[in-house]
Length: 120
Image (cartoon, rainbow, N blue to C red; front, top):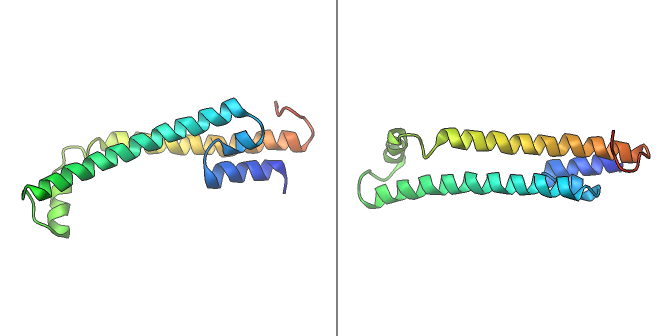
């Protein structure tokens, strides 16, 4: 399998930045992986905060258990703990992911062609 394909698969199927690390582009790989980890952490912390708020409301008896009660509570949430922020973080992760795939493939192709350092 060509290095370009292997690098793109590592970034696309496992985690952003791994393709760059495979190709020896450590700074870019660490930046992509680190940025992706930060975005994922912020996404899950916002989701956990919303779930915690809803669980607290259920425990306090502010809503009835069941699908209808939980759906009604979700509809009453002012902004679903920052739904705009969740969308922005999701978009940021997808951008980092696509950059990782495309750029690692581009650099890998240069390696495959014998350019060595991958600067095209």
